[in-house]
Image (cartoon, rainbow, N blue to C red):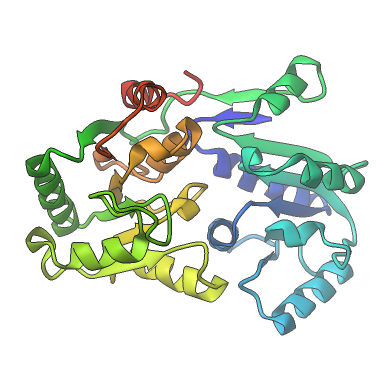
Length: 330
C-alpha cells in the first residue's frame, strides 16, 4: 500500500513499478475506478514511456467493440505490456499471457466484491495499491501484516499548498468576487473547476445543484463574459468525456462545470482554482480529493467551498476540518 497525499506523486511510483515489471518480461494491469481516469492514465503512461521498449494500451467503456476485441487479442498474445483500465480489466473475457503486477489506483473507490474477484487474479501477482484516503479495512490489513505500507510525505519540488476558503452562499458580494477571481485566473492562463453535487436540478435552493443549470447561469455572469464554459458528467459517454476533458486541458473551455466525476486522479497542471458548490453535501474524503485537482504545478492555487443557506452542525465541523488542513492523514 502506497499512501500519499493528493498530488504527491503516486502515479509516478506506479509508472516506475510498471516499467520495471514490463522490462522484466511481465505484463502489468493498472486498475482505475473511472473511464476519465483510465484515459488520463493511458496518456500519462504513454507519454512517460514513449521512448521505452514497452507497449501501453487501455480498456474502458470509451473503446468501441472493435477496439476492445483487438486489445484483448493483443493482450492474450503478449503484445501489450501495460494495460490501464476500469472494471473491464477483471472481466472473464480478459486473458493475460503472463501478468506479474497489479496496480490498483484510488483503492478507496473499489468495493469488497471487486477486491475478492481480484484475489483470484493475483495469487501469483505482485500488488501495488495506492490511495490518498485509504478505507479503514485496507489500513487494518497493514496493521495485521497482510499489506506492507509506504508513505509519501512532503510536497514534490515546485508544488505549492492549496489555499482553502469557506464562502457562505448568502454573502452575494463574496460570490460575485469569486467569479471575478475565476475570470482573473483564466486570464492568467489558469483553468477553473466548478463542482456541483448533482447532474439534474433537485432543489429549489438559491444555489441550484445542477451542472446544466450552472453552466447556463455562469454564461450570463457579467464577470465571466466571453469565457467558454464546458461541462463534464458521469452520464456522458466515454468519448464525450474524453473530448470534454481534452478541451478543458487545452484551454478551449477554460471553465469546466462538473460533478464528482473529476474527484479521482484527474491531473490538469494548469488548473489553479476550484469552486465547490453546496460543499456541505460532500463527504470529507470527497472534498479532499476534489481539492487535489488544483495546485498540481508551481502556480499558487485556491479552493473555494461555497456553503448553502442551512448548514447543520456535523457538516459545519466537516467543512471546518477541511479548510483547516490540506493533509489527508490529518
